Every structure is written in C-alpha cells, then in structure tokens.
Image (cartoon, rainbow, N blue to C red; front, side, top):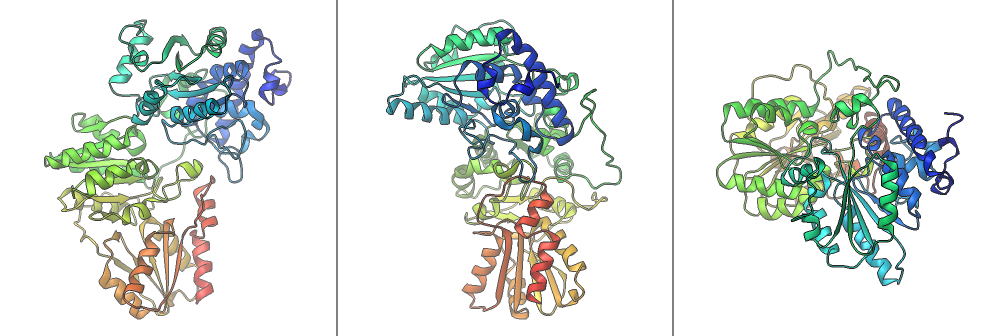
Length: 590
C-alpha cells in the first residue's frame, strides 16, 4: 500500500484532489485497510465493509464537516473515521485511551452527532436542518445514513413524520442490506425487499406518502452511479430519501456469506478471511448461552412461556428457542418500546413472557417498563443482558444504569445472580409465576462454572446469602462482581476478619440479614458493577439511615461520570471494582 492512494488521504480535502476514475482504486485500498486492522484489533467489520463506496462518495460530493453527516448507530463508520483525520491512529480503535468504535463529537468535528444506539439519525439531522433554517443558512446540507433495520424503529418514523412537513434541506440515505446484526424482520423489510428485485415502489410508496422525494434504489457499490445521484440530490431542495442497496461484508467472501458472524467477528486472517479459532474447550459458557439454553429447557416444560427480543436473537441467545419453537419466540426488530408492551399484553392473557433486552437498550423503553408493566403489576420477566461494564463498545453500551433506574420503580423485583447456576435458578423461579414483574441482570461473556447444568432449585425472593463470616469488615456484593470480591479476599492475609455477603436481590433487600450485618460490623463495603448514584450501595445507606445505624459505609461502583472504552478488566480497575481495587479499599479500612 506504500505506493497507493490512501497513504495520501488524511482528510476529505485530500480525497477531493483525486479524479473520479481513481475512486474505485481508493475503495479497494480502504477496504483492505479496514480488513487488515480489524483482523487483529477486532471490532465491527461487516457494516463498515458495506459502506466503503458510499462513504467515499459522500465525502467527495459534500463539503464535510460544513455539510453535516450523521451515521445511524455508527458501527459502520470506520471508513468515515479513516478518511477524516484518524487513519494513523485507527489501530487504537476501541482500546483504552484510543479512538471510539462509534462517532463521538469530542473526537472530531466530522463526527457531528454521537451515536451507538439505533434510529436516532433522522431526528438529530432534522434538528440540525431546522437550526440551519432558523439561522438563514439555506446552502448547508444535512445527511442521515440509516440502515434498513434501524429505519423500522418507531423513533425513525417519528423523525420521518416530522421531516415530511418541513421544507428543510435534509437527505436520508437508506442503506438497505437486509440485515442489522441479525437478519432484518417485519413488514417494512418485506416492502423494501420488493424494491431490490426490481419492483420499484413508486405507486403507494410509503416514503412518498410521508412527503419525501424518493430516489432509487441504486447499487451502493457503484461509485459512478453514487456520485451522479448525490450530485443531483445536492441541488434538490426539501426532504428526500435515497435508497441504496449494499452488501454487508462486501469484498470479504466469508463476511458476505456469513453476515451475522462477521458483524463483529473477533480476530481473523486478513488474507484468507478465515476466523482464528478460539480454544473454548474446558471454558465455562457465556451467560447469554446459559440464558438461551435454560429458557428453551423451561419452555419445553411450560407451554405458557414465550420469548421476546428486540433484534438481538443471536446476541441474547434467544436464537435457540427461536430455532426450536418459532411460534413462541419473537424477534420484533429494533423496537424496545414495542417489545416491552408486547410482553405486557401477553402477560395480561396468562402467558409467561421472558423479554430479553440488553441493559443499555432497555433504557429506550423506560416509560413502558413503568407505565405498561410496573404500574399494572404485570409479571413480565426482564432478562437484562450485558449488565455492567461491557468493554470496548464503551459509554453507549455499558449496562451500568439499570440498578439505579429500576430500583426506584414500585412493584418491580430486581435480581442479580452471582453465577450461572444462580441465574438458572432465578429464571426457573420466575417461570413458576410471580405476583410482580422481575428484572434479572447478568453480564456479557463467560462466568466461572463449567458444570452449570444442575437440577433447578426455587429461590426465595428477597433472600441474601452469607458467603463468609467475619469480625471487623463486611463486604456486601450483588451480581457477578462477587467473584472479584472473592479474589480480593483470597489475596489478603487477614481475610478471616472480613465477612462477605451476597445479595442476589437488590429489591427487595433482605432486611433481616442486612440488620444483622449492620449490628455486627462497624465497617461495610458495598460492591456493584453499576453506578454508585442511586445504585445498590445507595439502598444500603438508605436502609442504615432509616434505621438509625451509624456504621461507616463505603460504596464501590461506577463513579458519576461516563466510562469510555477499554477491556472489562481495565475499566473495572478504573472504577475501583477490580479484585485489586477492592483489595486496596479493604486494606485502607482494616
């Protein structure tokens, strides 16, 4: 690549010096650059490979960053980052103190809007376009690039609905590749598929019904066609939508053929595209797989059980139930609000709905959790995946707020099992029937128990466990962070003086056990993998204050600022909840 075009491109101003005939060669070099870096550093691959030509065309035709470009979700923005001043540091992508895996306003003026969750681009871009209009700037362009899976979300339609009654200079580019992370689903997907096979949706076009000028579909890998069309649209006033057809993983055979796996494939051979196998023999399963296999096992014994996920059947492992019981497991697309209220509706009819949603995405359905589930006291079972620090995806994806945002809601039970077996037992207990909704939170990745398939055991709601008796200091942990506490205690010579208690239920608290702890120990250290403000530790402090206990209580957890990207271990250490961080806190108070 030393004699190539990409080495001379640092910013879009350099890109514009190339002739149009040179752009296909640049696309090849850019695609190779992404493949070579992601092969060893990991990250989101398929989505970025699918927009190579589109990214080049956008920065070539439009005057970025003066023209405002927003990438929905942002996991497809690697080519954008490389062409906007970050090529030389792209190898630090998603690493501690490196660049973010998603567009981030503080990182570059070319990142006009911070993203990470889906379907926000149209609303944000419309806001920018209305601002330009109010300021009298009629020449500025405003472009939102959104995928076919994301445009099916309610928020995207809210943005389209508003934009269609404005005369703003907004261009929505629909990147249609028939897949998000998993294959796209729903009626809109079927509608768009017809356009791909030549049935041009000009009659009764849903986009034109929303007062947008519709253009396309065109081949999103045909640079001359992209350039010609974007040049035309640049001079077209008012709301408009360009429908482009792309292939996720374009240019890497394996990524095109296995689009789900190569969304974020881990390490692979850049020359062959083959995944570098991981030796998982003898390793515990991922918590997601424990959930997936357990709900299938439970569903076989209980015909009332149904599973629901908003667009994450593979990530959440609900795929196992979907494969075996497709009529009882539902992928509703990127529609968290709908997923929660759908579960509520099912619960009113006597079904037992397991609604599995990533912690960071459940935030998007907060009103539905309160209004449609908790207020009506419907026994929906929320399986909150990716709880706690998740690592390289960073601040947009950490599941650190759920303890705080759920604990304040009346009627809801909040549970945090310490390991895979307790997770199974929580799921089993919930399946037997509860009088309240329950949220069961568990982390991303592997636990520590290999032989987890043990017979089910019902758990008493609100009951804690004493892991270890002590004399001077009590550690109270919740969830799988208990493992870090165990490691910390094992490294302290005087650990016999330290008690360790596990509260598998954050709400309701085991008040009897907590009272005993507060009476016996003068110093209490709480440990959680969520935010300190309003979290588990706060509930312990509140209880002590209400009952006039005067213990010294130290709360460990995620501090009151956003935590960015790095490995889980690095970020635990920054938050003081790694085994070493916990050990240091204990020693300070012995």
